Length: 343
Image 1 (spheres, helix red, strand yellow):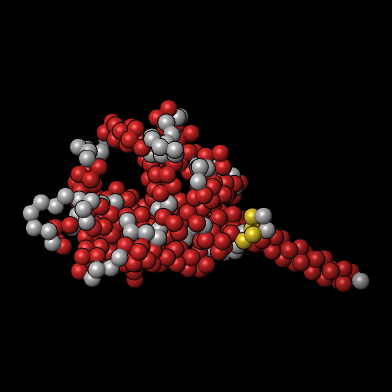
Image 2 (spheres, helix red, strand yellow):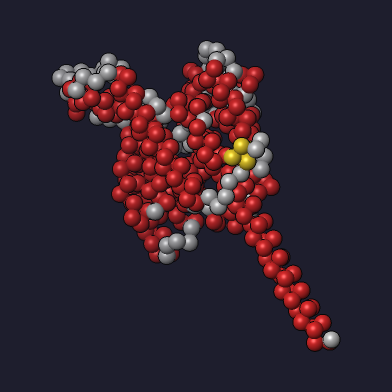
């Protein structure tokens, strides 16, 4: 509780706010009133992270048409046992809350007609922990639903208006949290440069300001790689990043408009949230440790995106093969019938 200076009387309500103060507000009763230890807090927050993983596990099992193997190992369910994902979603802090909240939110978006209130509660937790991620969720969900064909045009217009109003209403809090006066390229660039400079220290510090934009994106998505590893966690992350890099090579070959059309809404939302947040973090994080921590919130959706493109393409090839087989079977039947008539 000493992380934030509270002037005057200290009580539960004084801690309510965004970012770290919200985590202190959440843990006030368990720690101050119930007297639970920090270890117990890690267990409770780890349980939330596990629930988030379970949401993604269930949706992957339900909406992916098939599985895919790498080195004769099935991607499902092994991708849900990656140590980096469990490490950063299993302790007291914003990372666990955001990972759980984003997973819960996309779970709600997948069936938004009956789970809309789940989405609102999840959005509350994500926005209070990291306001910029909350705004990204609103944009991601709106775009993914508007691009779909599940609802009528007039409902899409209403949804778009509500999303715009909500974003404008929440933008003041987000600007205050980021310490910006306005959303402009100049202000965001200045913030990114300042953040990158502050983080470029320690064993895992990197001079991201000297990198080109493609190299910054590569660094955020696929590093630390083996030559960057300076501890066990970084080494384990290197194996994960190697798989991310390998699967990303399949995007061009397996991409198709049909795959994007058939993609589950939860995955559309996740990848739409992933793209702008990754671009923002890639330009502002100058420390590999911070990169591992921040990309844990959304990197799983990039992995599932690559996975889905591969299995969708595999399914389409199988269906085309069945169509060709049926065509040749019908053709042979016609030929045989004509031969019988001739005889």
